[in-house]
Structures are given as structure tokens and as C-alpha cells.
Amino acid sequence: MRPRIHWSAVLVALALPASAIAQAPARPPLASVSHIAVYSSDIAKSERFYVHDLGAVKLADPENTTGARYHFAPTQFVEVLPLPPGYRSINRLAHIAFDTPDAEGMRKYLSAKGVKVPARLTTAPDGSRWFAVTDPEGTTVQFMQPPATPPAVPANPLSSHVMHAGFVIHNRPNEDRFYKDILGFKPYWEGGMRDDHPTWISLQLPDGRDWIEYMVIGTPNTTGIPADMSAANLGVLNHFALGVPDIRVAYTLLWNGERLDGQQQTPKIGRDAKWQLNLLDPDGTRAEIMELHAIGKPCCSPFVAADPEK
Image (cartoon, rainbow, N blue to C red; front, side):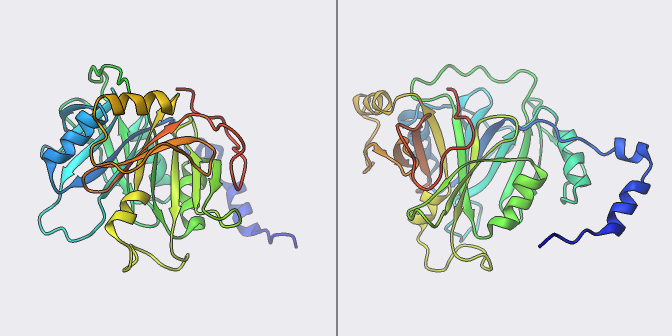
């Protein structure tokens, strides 16, 4: 059956002057994950995990003076924040963030698309600029314009690439309207524990090869964290990934540096046919160490976009 054409909308569009069409703001580039922000119940334990175990460089947090940034690269990091007073949720995900060279242009673009945006950007002492919105399911999403001179961060022997960020969703079509239709994210791979039921949906940023991963739970008409979900399971779903060229080299580095204390996992091949190692921070947030390329055919669906290169 052919879709019904709403001719009134078409006629209105045709009646718009060329100047009005030309003034519609274009979307600025989105090429990489900036960071994921997580809450910590014990800052000292978190610091040991991110600095000692993962090799990140701790720097001050110009966004929130009570937190810290653990850098894997000059413009990629994990932001660790103390639990807010009175915080009762088991959720440890504060927000996810993407880099853009033009935060103000992105703010205007999203506003023109009907997304609620703040009246102005926030500017930090280091010169970085950002703003935040919420996606259709309430996840806070930041758009970060890095400072003109990013901090000097040496190459991390484990990984210098925050390759993707994953988070819980319920309603894929609703989320797609934001991430795909408005922001331009593109399919990469999808799969799950069952071949015929995809619950891990990977979408690459429109101008790069980093990606996000929908972790689909519940049913499309539900929201929030299920009452029967444990903090441990939620921490596995809300996660970030560090890209590595060779998991054996990465695991050897961690093993020989005695950086695996308290961890239960060993490297394995995931359903996407990529070698991976899952580590947990002290509050249960999963740090996934993942090879850049699959070793064979993945389950469920093929990869439909190019892998990250490094």
C-alpha cells in the first residue's frame, strides 16, 4: 500500500521563500565519542581502577569541580562524579557526550528540529563549550566542543580510543527519531543473545566510526529501570568500550601489571565475532576492552559500515 502524501505540508513547503529554506541550519559534524560520565560511591577506588588498572590520566574536571576526568586521549575520557546527596537510584550513568567542532551550531540545529535546548552554551575555564539535552527516554546527552588547545595526554599503552558507549533503552523507534533522523547516526551492526531478537543495536556517528549501542530492555511501552533489575546487570548494560588492535597484547599488559585484581572475566569472542574483555569499575560500570575488527562472521546480521581504524 502506498503511503498517504500530506499535500498540504508539501504545498506549504513549496510556498516557502528560498531565503527561508537557505537559512535552515545545517548539522555540524559529529565524528567521535567525547566521554561517558558515571557516578562513584568511592572516589578513591574509582581512581585506582581508571588510573592504575586502565592507565588513564587523571585531570581536573572543568565541567564539575567535584569530579575528575580520566583521559585516554586529549579529547576522550571518562568523567567520574561523586554520588549526589540523597541519590537513591541504582543507575550510575550520568550522561554520554559527543564531540563537535561547533557546539553553538549544534544547539541551533537541534532547536530548529524541535529539540528542547538550553538558552546558551556553558563555557569552561579551559575554553571548552558544551550544552546538554535529553533523548526521548531521558538519557542526558552532551555536545562538547573541545578547547582550542586540548590537554597533553600521552598515548596509553592499553588503549587511547573510547570507541563506543552503550546505554539502556526500551523503545527503538522513538530513539531512532532522535539519533538517526535528527542527528544522522547510521547502522553498524545489531544482534543479541538470540539470532532472531536483536537487543544490541549499534549506530555509528554520522561523520566518524565511533558508535553508540542501544541496550534494549523491557517492552516499547515501558520506561525507566525495571524494578527487578540489579545494579550489577544495569552496570553491564550502561557501559563504554576501549578499542584495541589485539586483545592478547592488552590482556598480557594487564596481567603482567597486576591490573586485574578482583576481575572475574577473561577474553572471549562476542556475538559480534570480536574479541573482548569485560572489566567492571568499583560501582559496576562495564569497561569493555574490544578488538577493532571481527575475526569472522558475526551472529544475527552483517556489519554494514566500516570498523574503526585504531
